[in-house]
Image (tube, helix red, strand yellow):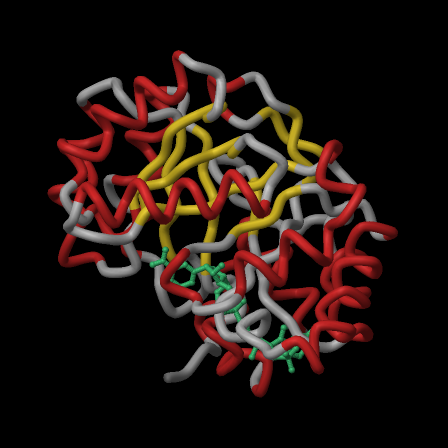
Length: 252
Ligand SMILES: NC(=O)c1ccc[n+]([C@@H]2O[C@H](COP(=O)([O-])OP(=O)(O)OC[C@H]3O[C@@H](n4cnc5c(N)ncnc54)[C@H](OP(=O)(O)O)[C@@H]3O)[C@@H](O)[C@H]2O)c1
């Protein structure tokens, strides 16, 4: 799988990661499937895994599915709460799930980002966090996301990017490139809706052909889908014309 330099972090990231929203929020009896998905994407070269306390049981399921692989994985998770006490509980749980360290800690949906970044910076100095990031799923929050980016306090952002969600192209991706931030594309398959119109590998290549994006994080609960997704993480990429043609056929 092709690797990209993840902005100024200097990390080398295989371009297809794994999201865990919904797909990893499963009970113990169904964790075996999540483990098989992790095994499949790991074999395909994936090393970047995204989760959040917002995703129910997903963080713990991911930690157990990674098992010994955790040492070689890049774990990107999030803090999602307006309470600083709850943030501490979320972080403590993450340290348990991921062997005492979070590679990329993101402020989920920008909730109380100023206050969270303060304690996160202390945790980064103490070595329990590698890098800091911020995420938002809605273009209505992109003004505020831009403000966070310009503070110089974060190393990475996560935004939606697929043929029907292109708002990040206007200001967020150019600014991320200017500031040399890592860029994670969430919802690369449009939450699953776009796979009814297009080949999922083409969709992933559509997102990854934009050089300002470093890693796309499709989620799946299906081992065959996991293999398809990792196989998309290499050339040939789509040309600019092919990207526009595909996007022109995308329908809500
Ligand atoms: N920070 C935020 O606000 C935020 C918001 C949304 C998402 N995210 C992150 O981004 C990740 C990805 O976004 P997402 O989960 O919303 O949507 P997505 O990855 O665009 O789509 C996931 C859906 O696509 C299906 N799928 C995956 N691979 C497939 C394949 N090869 N063929 C056919 N169907 C396939 C999955 O179903 P199967 O299980 O059947 O494969 C699943 O229903 C999330 O899991 C999460 O980690 C973050």
